[in-house]
Structures are given as C-alpha cells and as structure tokens.
Length: 202
Image 1: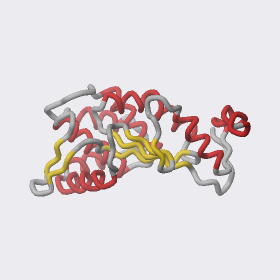
Image 2: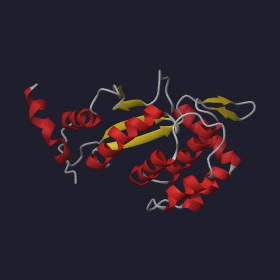
Image 3: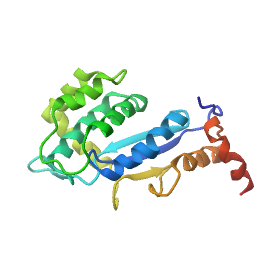
Image 4: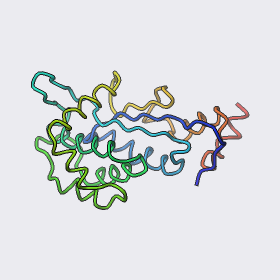
C-alpha cells in the first residue's frame, strides 16, 4: 500500500487509447495496469480516454475507427465503463478486455457477452448500467463526442501525458516518471522509495 504526504496532489496521468490497438494493449499490460496498482489513486490520478484515432461525422452522427466498426463499438463499452466507475474499478474491466478482445482490425462488433462477462467479474461495476449506457444511441453518440473533444492532437496511440507532459510510452518507465513527479511535489510513497535517493543526488 502506498503512503503519501498529506495535502500533496496526486500526479495526473491521462492515457489516450483505443480498444483494439496492439500498442495500447502492450502499454496497458506492461506498464499502466501494474503502475496503477502499485501507486493507487493517492499518488496517481488516472484518466483513460478511449477514442484514439477515431473520426466523427457530425452530420450523420457516425464514427469511423482505425481498426473498424468493432473498435468503435468496443470504445463505446469502455467509455461507458469510465462514466460509471472510478479508475480502481474500470481498470479491472479494461484488464479483462485486454485479454478477451483480439487486437487489430474488426469489421463487426463483438458479442455483448464479451463485455458483460468482463463486467460481471468486475467488483462494483453494474453490468445492467453498462448495457443501458451502451444500448442508448443518444448516450453512445454523446459519449463519442465527449471523448473526441477530450482527446488532444496526437501522432499515435497510446498517447500519455503525465502532469501535462508527454512521455515516451515505449521507452520511459511510467512508474519512475510518476514517482519523480510526485516526489518533486513533496510526496512520498513506498512504491517510489527506490527512486528517492537517485532523485536527490541528481
């Protein structure tokens, strides 16, 4: 469990992703999921924005996604999860999907059972709320608009900002980057102890 200095603000981590992106899956599985569990929300204020390289057509109210209609639909499920749960909860849902969904192009939506199955094994995520959100066309479109607006200009995904600063998702150690930001703000966390001495000497 993390320990932290009172009144120290957590480090804001914004991760811009899309559901069927292989590089996003790699980043989630190898860095993001483990780092969040080590640090917790006291140190890491995590925001996942599932939209990525999708494009909106405001006239027809349709979405075109890099990896096909299957990705657009999966993005909608993920957006609904973010809307209905805190990061501690929706991270478990995302973790399940990272293993349940085949990455890459998908012309057709995956069965609802894939997403509801992941919701069913995620504590504190109501699968009925999730399905109502996903199955409501107006809600689904409004969320696509919301997450499109929240997604900054980017060159690729995943696109990750730590306290507003772009990191190198492939080469940077996310845990170290967040720890150094937290320590710079006066914070202290057990999971960051291995970086404190080198930070002070630099």
